[in-house]
Length: 93
Image (cartoon, rainbow, N blue to C red; front, top):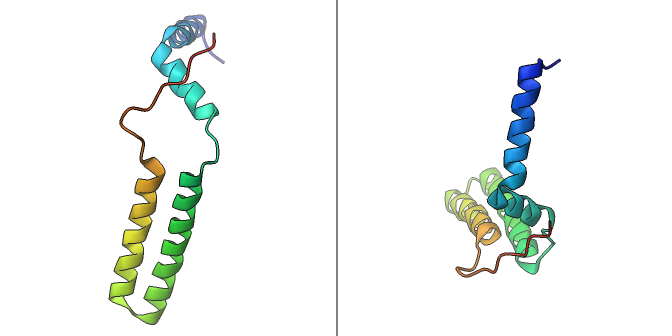
């Protein structure tokens, strides 16, 4: 159970977050993400990379394992890549 002063501090924090447009924009962007071809590609590369790591370790192939680990890294890059001048979605109050 929160004390009265803690409840007041929590209410102040919530009010500050509501007025923080950067926080609201980021939250709205996170809630409206869709499945895109780029993300499907990233997931496919990651799955292939993990399978490659398992096969490489099982077969004792150092080169194959390193290549598969690099593929997982590429998948992470594909997943997180964004264009330099991406348009911000409008904020609806």
